[in-house]
Image 1 (spheres, each protein chain N blue to C red):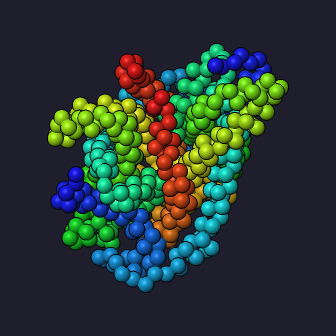
Image 2 (cartoon, rainbow over the protein chains, first blue to last red):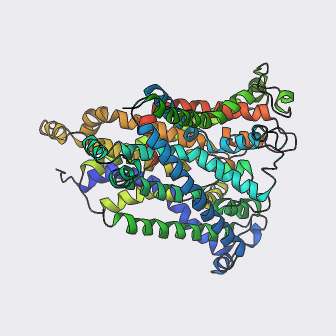
Length: 288
Length: 272
């Protein structure tokens, strides 16, 4: 099916993209490795010096770094199950026959959270969850809850917005899986059993697995990347209660000016990302 | 099959879903139409006289207009550049056989997994040394790291779906590979190209972190501008929400146009 073409032709087609992506994607990484091996503080640029692996040692023994990492995975561990559970419910409802108009409306409204700029989600959070003027406290019957200023509430708020923004995505992925079930199989199964649970577990679930794997991989990557929404909502605070890994590195590098240390943190984050990606691929795509 | 009684739980659930999805959006738009006094009323008011003052003030007095233009220039440029680089690469990946193709494909796609902060640190230092801070071109280039993979991912798929016989026929007529790509495959691949362009535009338009780190005033993007309203104690809620609305509306239009492909684009790199 494919044809052999000269190397020159292949390079002419693919070379520009490779060079382009290498320039913006790989060259900076190499520079980050170089920076991470130096004492490199933006306020003390006169004394940039080679210090070997000292930055890495600092990061690896830094409690704050691992706390931020743990917090990031804790967020993933709380938000993702919620997104999957709610997403599954939404997908199953939308998959039922009937009520076409309402379901079309439902499907279109799912696009809204996904399309909302991450930074705007954070700003919306500030407005809606404001203790005094916020609509959320009003809807809770005039409650006086300090959402943004209390560490636990702030963390809850991040979970809330992450779930709000990404449940529609999970729902649409799972809905796509449900529509893959051959109609004859689903109808045959419905004749055999009245239980929706049995139908879900034995007929529909196998078709949902690829989507669930995709969701797991993407949500892991996105949580490690999470920055915009949290930055506009809490800036990582109060204290460090919502300081996830990307926010922490940004703080150290740009608000603490320690580019060397931040680069070491970034490289370690990159290594963790690669290890996780490989792990996922081994576990999930081996048998496929 | 469905009796009216069985439908009620469904209807209620659907209404809840729609309300939860739409309410924050509704609140954003209505807050943007409130004066500061109305916006700061406690408890919040639901009925009020709408005003466009926030939009006028934000756009023309605070310079939001310029940041929207900056965002537009950057998003369009990076989209075009991604297409120019990505479409031929996608064609090669779909049509040619060569060593290391799988690895190359894997590398393109896994760029999506890398946290932007990892690249932001060195990119900031490099841009600073080269005097490229606060320039549009810097953001255009760094946005390639997520736009190029998405273009290659979607367009390769589209090219693969085009029957190979068409290429073959053209080749017998003596057409070169470039002619085949431009004259035969590209017109047929247009839906995929359009969707990848929409994605590329949305991702660039929405991006905050690079905009925050790599720009100051001249190339400041709209999301970075919205954030800068947050400094100080007396937050101008109406203006913040007006700016937010202006940022979200174009994305929403594009997302609704591409809604059928939305999931496919977002699952890039995680499904085969």
